[in-house]
Length: 395
Ligand SMILES: *Cc1c(COP(=O)(O)O)cnc(C)c1O
Image (cartoon, rainbow, N blue to C red; front, top):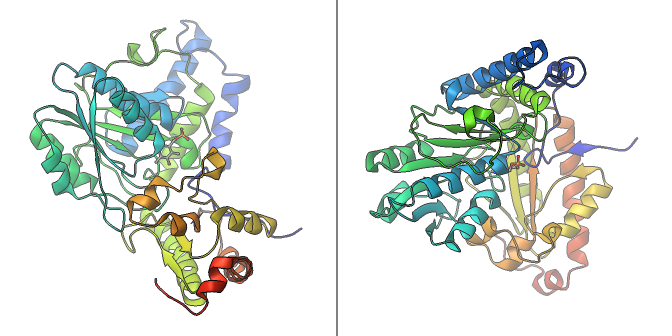
């Protein structure tokens, strides 16, 4: 068998065997509905409660501040729409960043079409939001600040503690999309003054289809799913119990030994970054050199198309992702790469490789063997490269 190197952990992770093991009985034997009064229901309720306790413990929240959802996307939608609707008498202004995940960004666009005003804060060349710009953007109409904890494309880690402190001082709600951050950076919702936080199990070795919204006690929010009385009357729909059990187990594992796991991932990541930057010219590393997720690498290779690069790597058994959005049916490059100042052309030649806990040094060495060759071959076919041969070099 040929090589098979998965470097797309920011898209999704496998489910850990010990997580799956805890989930399985809830498909076959313990299949009760947590809302039922009989023994089956009570057993299911117990498991739901335990998952809620584990999730709360991972964030330093109270169990009754955790609401399970069907995804990180749903948690983001609920956080932003729910608080906007519930607080619209107070004001109609929302502050967010220009590099949020589409789950927040497109929710804000939707609200703009419905009478809300949104400030999209710029970021610097590394993708950092300046907390002082958050402070300066606040008006007497501002009801919510939503800034992600860590970016899914370039891995930049935001100063959410500082932003949270400013929002709290001004009496404005603070939401953070922590879908990429949970399990990678320590999060304490009390210490960081976070009012709402989104997470998703399949980004930290749990199953797909289970997310959660942390909502601090006392936060005013409308529900967006109407129907039954699940989740203490705030999110209707029978709970996806096997997946929620998996979320609970996965988050418990994810917040244990973060420094040790990060040290291992950072060593692999730096080997990859140094190896590529020293052998492939006309290449830049996107994102912050230090304030970045331990497993995130994002390069731009001048003169080539990210999509062509991805396909060539796939043939060699390497799974990555690119910043150009052909996959989503559009030719626009990533809004994140444009926001950090890349030209359309450079943004199109980008590649994201995100490492996870099964990756080894051998995986990285294989990428270091294959990637420079592939880039070289694609460049040789590129008219742009031939015009510029021997031209600019930048990092
Ligand atoms: C993956 C991701 C989401 C969406 O989560 P899903 O559970 O896949 O819907 C939201 N925000 C960020 C930062 C993500 O990386």
